[in-house]
Image 1 (cartoon, rainbow, N blue to C red):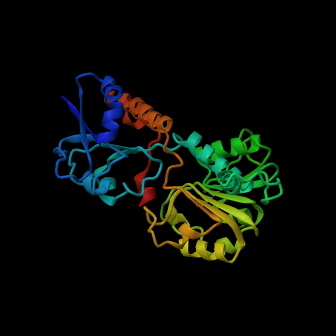
Image 2: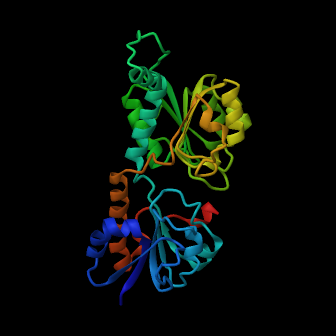
Image 3: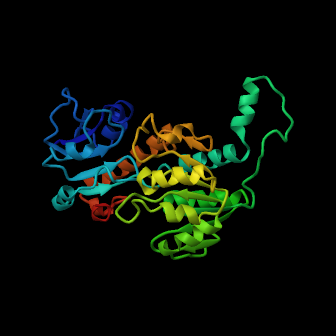
Length: 327
C-alpha cells in the first residue's frame, strides 16, 4: 500500500529524492501550496510535513481536510500554527524540529549582539561615506563577562548557553522544570516563577521559549520595567510572547538599550509599526533559523522518524510532542 505524504512544493523540489529513498515504491509525495486552487487532492494523505508553504491557507485548515492523517512533522519548533483540539481528538502523532535550528539561531543571537555592542551600523555607514573615524567615534562594548539570561531552556537555549560561556559570559536560564545537573553549561538555573530575578540581573535577555497558554504575553509592562537599565532584549521565539506595545514604550523611555527582534506579534510586521523607525531596534523577518543546513537537518530528522513510522514504531520517533500542552 502506498503512503501519501503532503509537503510544500519547495520542500518536495529540494528533498524528494532523499525522502522517497527511505522506502522506495511505498511512498507518494503530494506537493501543495496550501490552499491554492491548483493543489492536488489530499484526502488520502497519511503523513504531512508542515513548513515552507506559500499558499493562502494556514496548515491547520489543510489538516482538517485530511481524514486519514496520522502523523504531522513540523519543520519548525513552534506548534502554534498546528495545535487544534481536532488533531488532539483524532490522536494524530506530532513531531517537531526543536533543536534542529539551534546552531543557526545561536549564531544569529551572538552576531546581532556583537553588532549592537560594537556599533557596527555606525562603522558601516562611515565606510559608505568613505570616512576614517577615530575609534572613539561610537560607543562600544563587548560580550565578555556580561550576563546573559535565557527564557526557555530547551535545545536552542542549551546550545546558546554553551556558546555564550565559551565567550566568557555568565549565563542564567529559566525553564518550567529546573533540574540542574553537573553537565549543564549554566551558572544558574531558575524556575519560571523566578523570571523577575533573571530580568533584574541580566545584561541581555534572550527569549527562546515556545508559544503556549503560559507564555503568551509573558514579557509585558511589569517584566520590562524589571529589566536591568541598559539591557538588550532578544526575541528569537514567537512575537506574541512579548507585549509589543509595552516593548515600544520601554524602548522609547530609554530603560532598554535595544531590542533585537527576529519575530513580531504580526508577521509580516505592518509598515506603520513604530518599530521600523526606532534607532535602537534591529528587525529581521523571522530568519534566525532559516539556513540551508537547518532545513537539511529537519529533513534528516523526518527521514529517521519515517523509518520508525514505517516499521510500526511511531512511539519511538524523535521529538514527539504532546499537542495538548500547546492548546
